[in-house]
Image (cartoon, rainbow, N blue to C red; front, side, top):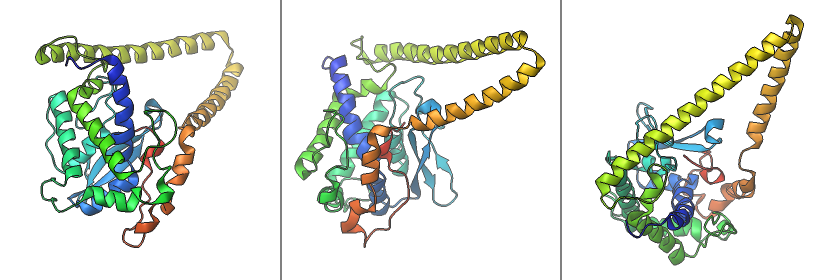
Length: 302
């Protein structure tokens, strides 16, 4: 815990989004995982509403009965208690491989880290013969059209290196930092611990989590109350005929808000979304069926 600083956590968060969320939330990478590591599940993705900035949320679905397993519904992921917990890609992978998710917030992240290492090192139970690195290199990294495939959020400019050794080393270094101190970023308010003892810190973080939930609830109810007050004032100051006009105005405002909500989708990554068409996998188009699932790299995932 002594190796943690808020500056290092901030830098780690950029690495994690770049080399974990972005890559393992990518539609093509997840298609490869489904085909090379077949299980009873398949990946699913949903676009959230305005409350989550129209981001993507990753889940898994049972192939036989279509039952969806969701990290939020299961109670593991709650951004109102752990505000930076955008780990739905990792939760869905744990569920996909039927790996137990610990109750402890640190231990569940350690399970994620071990899972990624098993995928990279070819040590995933029952799938030891799968060479993930070779497949990713052959089907993605070595394709010249993919050089602008994934953005570099660490430098906040350009794209990540697709050179095989550097690419996988960046992922492995991110996993090392995640294990060493980065897990704190996904707990509570995402700050470094203030206690030397882990148990004491987690008790403190639990208090912070409750504060986050309370702040969110108070903000919600204050917003509702404010709206009610304004509507009551508006009603008392206008006649019946003006109420009809107000109703039309509110409908117009509602339409404007919907239009604004759509326009707030991440325009900064439109070029990446366009580059992720089927041409990015020309070398493998004969052996793999294309899927129409959304490209998770184009929006933030939760």
